[in-house]
Structures are given as structure tokens and as C-alpha cells.
Image (cartoon, rainbow, N blue to C red):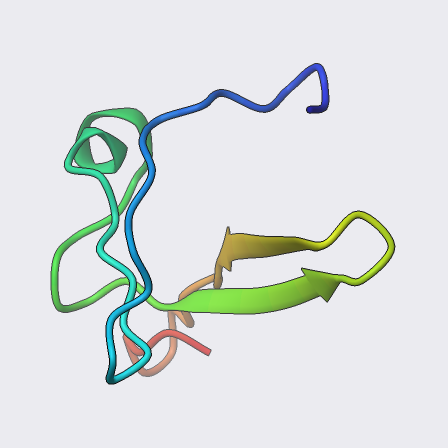
Length: 64
């Protein structure tokens, strides 16, 4: 695990491919339920999925 990584919790991949995110992300990241979009990246060498908050557009108010 990288120096800047913090373990929050683990969850089972649901049959419909959903993964629940820990509630602690609401306290630790600038995210809002039903509004924040995440970009999903695959690190195939380390077998890791990485979620990054997508920046929001000031012009139209929607995440890109």
C-alpha cells in the first residue's frame, strides 16, 4: 500500500456490479451523495482500482 493510501473498509462486489463506498468518505473528501462523479482507473500491474473525483465544470454545474 502506498504512503498516501488510507484503508477505510472492505465490501463485497454485488451481483449488479455495485460496490458500496464507506460513509467515512463523506467526512474525508469533498463529495455529495447523488452528485459527485468518480473516474475509475485500473492499475493492472498492482491489481488495483483507483477512484478519482472528477472536477466539476463551473460553466454548466455538472461534473465532467
